[in-house]
Length: 130
Image (tube, rainbow, N blue to C red; front, side, top):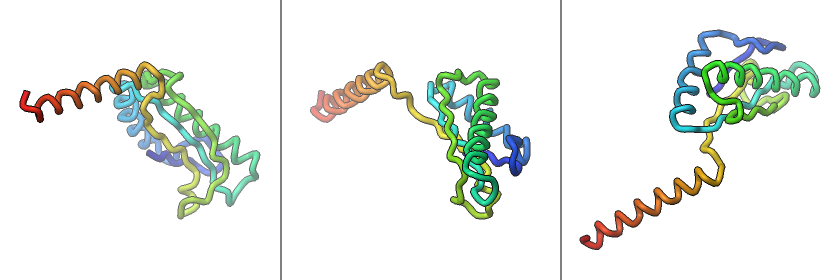
């Protein structure tokens, strides 16, 4: 989900975008998901140093908003994409993108693998007529 920012700032173009963070936080917390926030600036303005800093500022803003919505900070990773020209119009490159990710810890993966194995065994038992 993308959040758009005013030129050279960490301010959203429209604060009504914050409603999206309510849903993201609810889903992330319910399912124990991790979040990756990547901030970006348009590469048509500023220089590399400024755009990297601005991308990080935008990602930090979104992270702070997620923490206010009870998402644990250790489940949020932020990165700066710096200046980009991926989207048209150019204003769309002034963004922060939020992605929900499955946790990558060993306990989580072990639990999921056990669930898959149980499901596989149940399906096999049913297909064998048992």
